[in-house]
Length: 158
Ligand SMILES: [Zn+2]
Image (cartoon, rainbow, N blue to C red; front, top):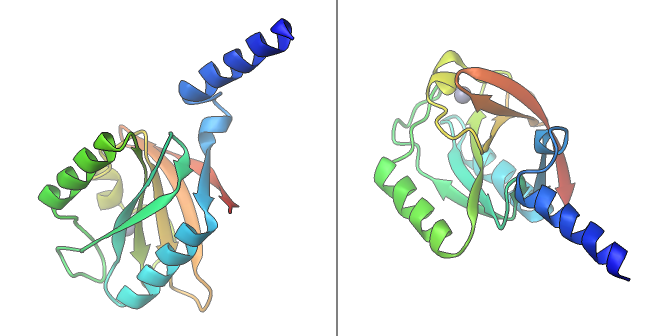
């Protein structure tokens, strides 16, 4: 049916452009990536853990790339800029995009610090913070753009 085909094409176009406003406030994370990320944060405690997530399109996290916290600090993190750039080039080569940047707060709540906001240079990526302040990890996610932040919903999928 021709009419249906046109509709599908239209839908694809919307998704490729980043989805509707509502849709761009949701981050989809593969369940195995989610588990890996929490595990990495628990393992690195009491130091802050950090890493990036990638996917075939914006808003979708399919792979995890653990990074070293150059600061080895309990209260802040910094990725190695060369490693990050190398990874981003590889993603581009594989037609993937940077979809998430995660780090842990070993003792603080899952909200970005002033420094986190100042250092957020990727407005298209979701900033994920894993708090290990309590026995169960608490995770919150934000889009940070020009020092303004907007909470995002996290949805897990297989
Ligand atoms: Zn932080």
